[in-house]
Image (cartoon, rainbow, N blue to C red; front, side, top):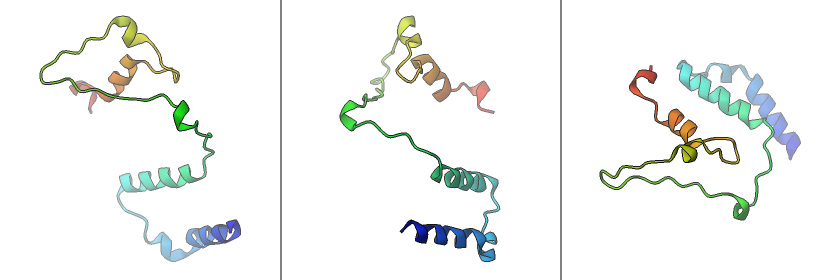
Length: 98
């Protein structure tokens, strides 16, 4: 079975016609390159679902103000990511969007 997949992949990569179908859009090329490179990366074995920590996001109701203490903002999770770091990356200000 694996031998057949390797033959198929080899033929897709070496046939000249497939080279004519490369997207001209740079973003499309970048995404395709990322996808094809990720196929061959070694993936860590995932934990069983019952051992995974849940992740939830809450949305303030109406005009509710949400306040975190400084210790909550700086506390890192098991991956070493703090709430403050997460919010800085997800919610960039107008000066950081360019």
